[in-house]
Image (cartoon, rainbow, N blue to C red; front, top):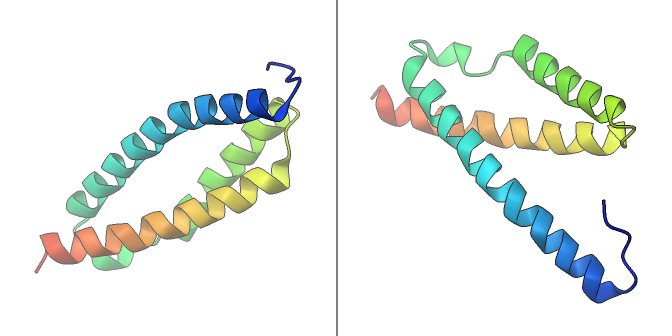
Length: 96
C-alpha cells in the first residue's frame, strides 16, 4: 500500500483500487446469474448456511490481512443480500 502525501494521491489510489474491484464484482455477479439458472427449486436461492460460510471466509481473509473485520462483514452481508435478491429475479425469469 502506498503512503499518500495529499488528497490527490489518496483519490488516485482509491480510483485505482476501484478499477480492480469493479471487474471482480461483475465477475461475481455472472456466477450469481449462473446459480439462478442452475438451481431447480426457488427455495434453494436463499441458503443461510452458505451466507454464513461466505461471510466467515471473508472475515477470515480480513483477519489474515489484519484488516477491519466489521467493515468486511458489513460489506459482504450487503453484497450477499443484493446477490440473493438478484438471483431470485434470475430464477423467476428462467423458471416461468
